[in-house]
Image (tube, rainbow, N blue to C red; front, side, top):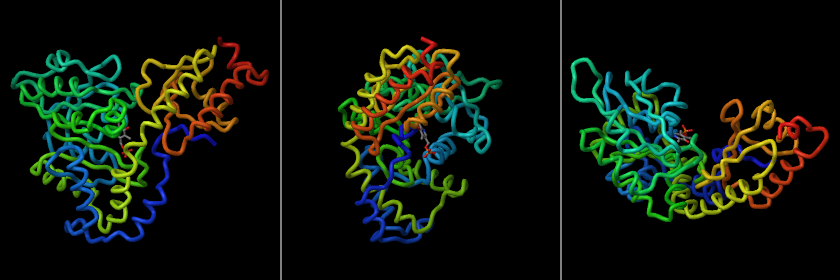
Length: 351
Ligand SMILES: *Cc1c(COP(=O)(O)O)cnc(C)c1O
């Protein structure tokens, strides 16, 4: 099977398994796990922040960030297809009493003027604008990147009006590698950043939340509140350290494979590939009615290619360490054959 559903399917490396086996551990709720300390120090340094916190998931990292930056009744500006707005079970509203204010954008890149227009003046009738959330890379808009300049311009507008900025950087290392910039150029202007160890970086579990010492102190309390205080989690942090030291540079391979995949699938009569948005490790595309994404995905599964549904007609493929360029060539060939075989006439007839 060629696993293109998500980079979360990456398995821990040999070196992670070894590091996990010998990791020095302690009770991290008591802040006494030396391996977690090493991971948190390393992560903070890599993204240029004072401190960081190991959290069980990206979703929890984002929630802790929102809870630490804003209070019940505040408004948080987000992009309409952001993970925080679409895929985090309304945690900000349920747990934090926060109101999310979604803004649409062309390719996941909010415009500074648009954010400025959404920031509220103090008024007894209105919620307080407290926080702006950015997403880099932007998942549902295609794995697209914000540049250092775009990030800085958005932060300037928010900071000028007294808002904090949180970056959902689940795949911020993909963004850095793709643009050939130090990740700090993408994180320096924001007040906090979350990134995942468990996606393209291949660790089995965990994400990091980074920011100022004060912010991380609040986030640590919030993590405990939402049930994310872990004990001898140094066994997991050990894998996270390998992820940060050994897995970042190789993301370029995933990006090259995504491009190869997108180019290979171009020109088929039944599907459109969003080739213009292939900037990192994701390829999105659309089926032409009446063929639905579900139908296409089911057909692909029969030839050993797994992909994910994005909406009724949209689908997503994600490259990662578990997908080689040979796998990509196989997937392209298998999918192209689907469009010419008589048994799959429905796919073909839609062209
Ligand atoms: C995956 C993802 C998250 C959440 O991470 P989990 O570890 O799956 O909870 C947050 N934001 C973005 C953009 C993501 O892609």
